[in-house]
Image 1 (spheres, one colour):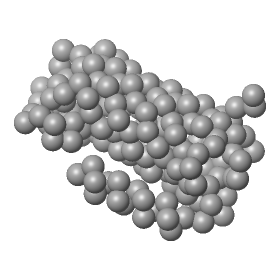
Image 2 (image 1 turned 60 degrees about the vertical axis):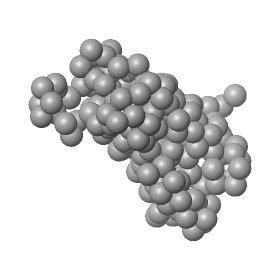
Image 3 (image 1 turned 45 degrees about the horizontal axis):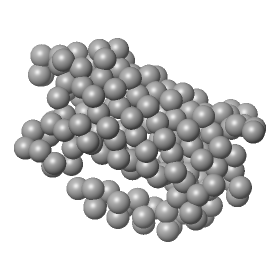
Image 4 (image 1 turned 135 degrees about the vertical axis):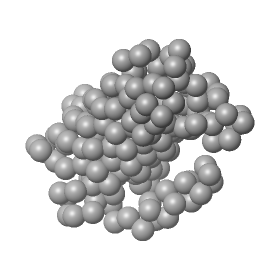
Length: 168
């Protein structure tokens, strides 16, 4: 699964024209949304609100940029992650698609068990600039242990975000 996602991610990066801008600034991304929204009450638990913060480096290797993030849910689950992403313009500096993949550490709450404390976070964001240094976006991501254990329910999240370029 991780190899397939990595291959798709690499093909997207190879086929892209350019990232948001050459020498793009570092970014801070704040998000709010729903964690594990697709399971809902099926497994006797409710969707939880999620709050996250990410740091995205402006410089990277070709189109790939490193990023670090932290997510907390209203029920107490915590996810810390780090990986790579690629900002791909779809409509000339108006709409960007940003696929990402990350390795993560997961501390579950009492009702959430993803089968492992080491998990993978794969996702995609669609964003639009609202200012020369700010973007709004909608992200969908999946968190899973990738088959590291027999129990692997996974969790899907949908979040709204705002990104702000950092002027150091």
